[in-house]
Amino acid sequence: MHFLHPLDAEKELTYQDVFLMPQFSDIVSRMNVDLSPQDGTGMTLPIVVSNMTAVAGKRMSEAVTRRGGLVVLTQDMSLERIEEIVKATKVCHPVFETPIVLDEQESVQTALNLINKRAHRAVIIVDKQNKPVGIFTEKDAYRRDRYNRLVDVMTRDLITVPSTQTPKEIFQTLHDRRLSIAPVVNLDGTLAGVMTKKGCVRAVQYKPALNSSGNLLTAVAVRIRFGLDETLDRLNQIGVDMIVLDTAHGHQKMMIDAVKKARSLVGPSKPIMAGNIVGEAAAKDLIDAGATHLKVGVGPGGACKTRMTTGVGRPQFSAVSEVAKYARAHGAFVCADGGVKHPRDVALALAAGAHSVMIGTWFAGTYESPADVQFDENGRMYKEQFGMASRRAVTNRTENTDPFEQAQKEFFEEGVSQTRMYLNPGQESVEDIIDEITAGVRSACTYSGARNLDEFHEKAIVGVQTASGYEEGKPVTKSWT
Image (cartoon, rainbow, N blue to C red; front, top):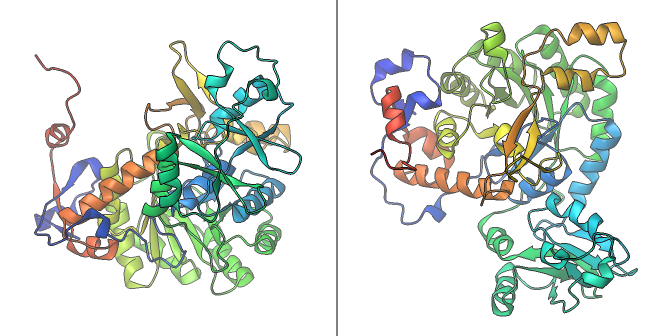
């Protein structure tokens, strides 16, 4: 990356402060751009989901990893719950979407309670042999008693597709039959998954993030203070692919010692991400300790109050740029954590040298995040989001500790305890947002004449703009007269 005006390199900048200059390009199609991070993880997209309780869970892990990204499960989960999600993710089909499955004797209300858990918004009714016998959508509940059994309301005229068909072939079947979704069945007729028309297109456009065994990737955040040995041993046993050592202030002795210990326990080949940091000195210490990936960002996140509470942090673009310069020179990789609100911000983080971008709050308002869908006074769908340093998160994290110690820790609040994250119409699924991000990043690469992310970082020319310049780039949604 180069600055349009070299003196701007001395400024402390965030994503809103900068822009990319268009350059000569001979790239014929945006689809010719390779977005894989090449960071040794197996990801095929530079998107990492933040280890936040309100964001990362089982459904998020399946959906994002199937499209090539990675989800970091939070350290606030019990090891039992983490093991459950890791095992579930690893047995997920890398192409077929996970269905909501119910018995025909279940009630309409039960189905309606579950239908917002998946973006395909359908329930597959199966018999005792796990063979699909019907499908239920919200249309089937119209003017029906909520206590009716599914067997009385489901659509029985069921079209299934064989698991041997390619996504393009399944799409054609759905198109010809004027269907939006169909169950996928194995040769013996048992349910293998579901596919939607969008899912068929995505299955061709994206490649799943797989480990060497062909299973979807998993990553777990680990506390550095207590029980590190026991936790890492358990995570190794269940086959977690990446360890993330996570604390708000990553440049401290306790973190450096934790990285050294983790490296000795998990061996030389497993990726270890450590953070959060914002400068070269911290990058050097963590890389020397054994970290392969560095998590960059103090205070830019949407649910974080660290900068407003403490004054500590650094504008994210400059933080990523400095850490990435050192990391790339020493064979390590950077994950830019926080501060992204639009696809342009993801592109700018990658231009600055990040190999991947961690997203939390943006993904909280989706079907796949763990919280239940709620409705506001106008009927709009939303989910509750909270920061991992908020009073709410601290209370949940310390509920089994001494009450006085818990009360003390609640004084140190650096996060938002409750925010409504609305499900954006047309982008209710995390996959819809991933589509928008990848389209933007692909275009940014072609504007810079880059065929992959390393070329993008090398060729990107960045300029600094005024606040008015940033405002000028926003679309106009209503008349100004």
